[in-house]
Image 1 (cartoon, rainbow, N blue to C red):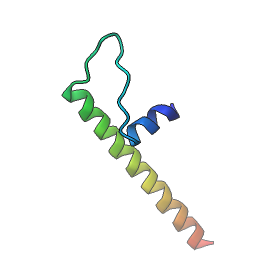
Image 2 (cartoon, rainbow, N blue to C red; image 1 turned 135 degrees about the vertical axis):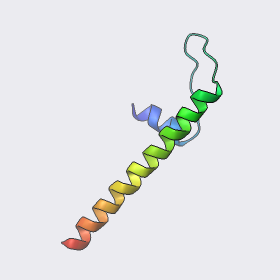
Image 3 (cartoon, rainbow, N blue to C red; image 1 turned 90 degrees about the vertical axis):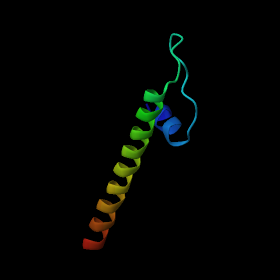
Length: 55
């Protein structure tokens, strides 16, 4: 699971499964996943900073 997330973040090409081609929809899906991962990490950092400032 972490390898797949890391490959999204580092723009590594995904292995083809059963001869499927990487089409435009798949690339768009990976882009959206990448954005959501970055937004989640940013939100987690903001929450941690707010907790540490409150202590």
